[in-house]
Image (cartoon, rainbow, N blue to C red; front, top):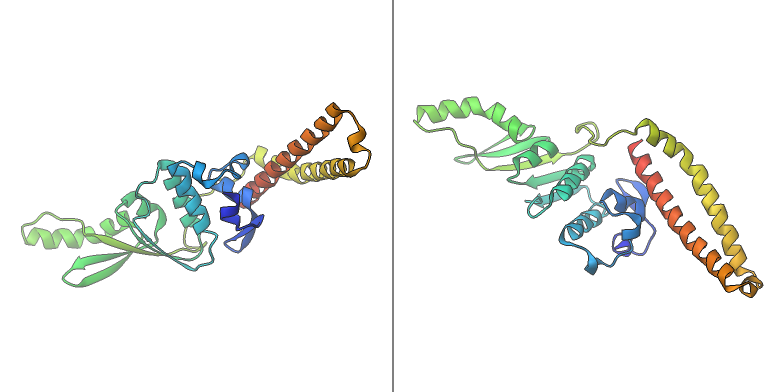
Length: 239
């Protein structure tokens, strides 16, 4: 999974920013220990999240999505909403999920019938508020109940158009972020010291238990480093 997203690299570029693959995958609900799992071992929901992760690493300024919420679980649906809100390109979206439209889009293109296509500011609920008086007048005069037309949505996403959905850092998270550089530095120093010890010609002359303890500590330090890198990426994104 790590290589599927990173294409053999440790970092990816998302919205013009370089991210460590582990930190990026954490945004898609994959903890660091899960990042190295083979794709074939993933559940259906996890595969959907992995596809989204790959999608947003591809350089593009236009996305066209046709019913993207079909077969998504709630966690993945919320994740997709958050990614689309933060995405800086232009999104062309067709969906019957009215709540999803309201949460994501900035304008709605409505096929009014008889060849008329009209653009309205906002999502589905905004269209109802703007359209209903005229629709009710026309339908009432014809003796019909007002009805909702099919909608196609075009949204130009940018930082100044859409409100952020990211939760700001709490006080404890701010303290955690400020302490992470020193923790990473200490772990890197310990890792370098252990690697130097293992490379020494005398290392394997030690007892088997001491050798095993050192090698195990190297593995644990590497794991802690990955966790620290990922956590730093996550907190910086929200800072």
